[in-house]
Image 1: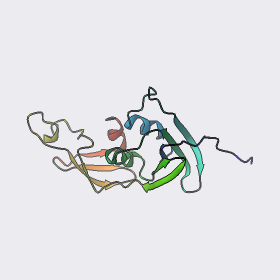
Image 2 (image 1 turned 45 degrees about the vertical axis):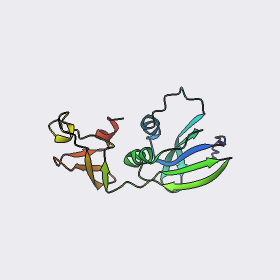
Image 3 (image 1 turned 180 degrees about the vertical axis):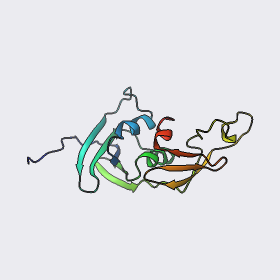
Image 4 (image 1 turned 90 degrees about the vertical axis):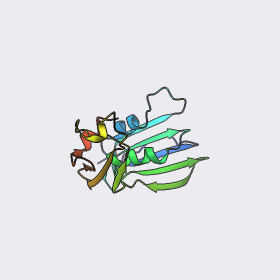
Length: 155
């Protein structure tokens, strides 16, 4: 078996999202609203060998640091991801994403008659995390269960 080398250049300032669940790098890009028109370099590595996950994806975003809501969104689809903040080519902050036990206002209930979908009621969606893998979220208001595919359709 030949040795494989990952050839991805370092970024001076920005964010590296590592340990993304295999096949979800493009979903992370979509969640972050990256469409290729940004000025900074965005690097996507998919199916990268990983001792921890077997295979993983990586996203590097030059010139951008993620806000807490973006990190929470990533946790929904990549619960093992790590966020590395890079400044002057050095990791200055490293955090693991953590899926909170209760999710407030990030996603909507996919059950149409749920009160959280009513335009006449100012109700903020709330979900309880029943399971991280596979992802199962239960709506606070109607009890509807949503999975990862339901969440991905919203981004």
